[in-house]
Length: 493
Length: 115
Image 1 (cartoon, rainbow over the protein chains, first blue to last red):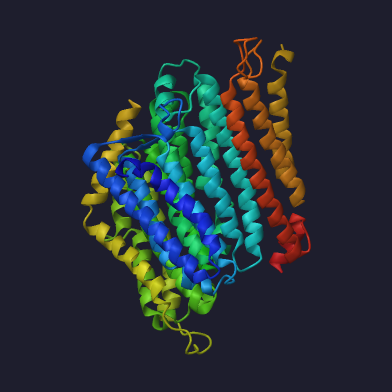
Image 2 (tube, rainbow over the protein chains, first blue to last red; image 1 turned 135 degrees about the vertical axis):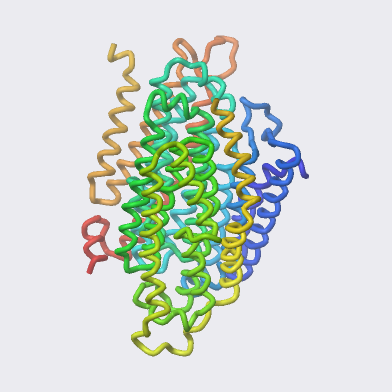
């Protein structure tokens, strides 16, 4: 059993997904989905412990030896990301039932859990596999599930947002597929480790760079890398609140993981940079995202839109860390990957709680909410402080590492811009705090407007506490990212 | 010279035509046609890569030892399935959009949303 943990990580949610359909009621389907998520989470903990004790796990699917068969590879980095994704999947899943009860028909709820688990399985598969074509398949499994999840939103705009996302996402996936095809025609292999070995000695740099270009653009579309982010704000705003909480914390993180895997692992950052200014490009795009998306966030009247633009900005920070390319830069990117998932999951769960009570996330409806929903709003404010990067929260840790990395590498403007970005985050979140705590509601609140249900508050507060805990006790996250970064940069040399 | 790489020229042209249709057309179904054309061009690319000159179909017979590489064919079989699922999902979305907006023209939908 323990030998098969690597494949069970993906297979458990994949097989649990269709089973959700046999339930007629949303509640029983939810219980089953939570159980599946809990098992998945437990497996990821098992994998992390196993990797820490015995090093990288290589798992050959069906006993077919790599590079002929498909291979799963769980190392420091992937076990860390697997833990993050399945943990978020489990925690957000806990709040799903009460949030959905106000947003989706009872009859359609089991379908929601099918898609939720499929999406989770796809994302975990991308992280676990060591085969580039397998990555494409899992990318499409998770994406197709995501399009359908987005389309389940209450308003009709959800359908249009899902359609737009589908078109952009399919173009992205197909670009990735073209890159895989070119790589296969150069090397004749699909296994990532094998690719790394063969590409090192290959002189056809132009062809390799073409494959790299296609793959990075494809991943960039999925990652919502500025300026390829146009699909993200609408998709996040109109999807059911709970789906957004899951997607915002996981989907883009997995794309970033994939970018790091390919850029630093398979292709080798140094080789690519000798041919194309990839690092500089990533830094410029990342910083442009951090500034422009933050400014756009300030002008939003919908809180979900605001958070979606803020996500684009935060992705910018991570991409900048990857672009800097030093040990500290990589560590900053990985730390922010982890920390941003914690913040955004907490924030979007708070939004789910607010939507559950007052039916919208319009900023005007936030007036006086601090008194009506004190626990939800307090959690929202703490997670918001973390997003800004206030000391004693996780946001501070990753911003600190990013600024350090920029200064160490001599990129002063980046350090300055990162601080400006934090300031902008303060402005757009202050707007919310001011409305919630310092202004009177326009109409007297009815007695129904009280705290969100406990099943949303509980996972949200776990995440909020995690935001503070990992901001003070940084041993676990810093240690794990250190190991992952040294592995990545060691492999690239 | 150009004829030697006929498949690849066809791939590049189909790819560009597909992307162009997807980006410029306002009709949602036409967008999907463009998207499908774009995906199909990639399938042709994989199949062209797999061809071994002088090779037969990848079936084990005593007539020939030389056969095309079967792996890309298998990969593309998977990608075709993915493409069909995407198209099916997209068309069902279009059907729902038609029901809710009574239009599948992008500008009319946008106009309705901004009202």
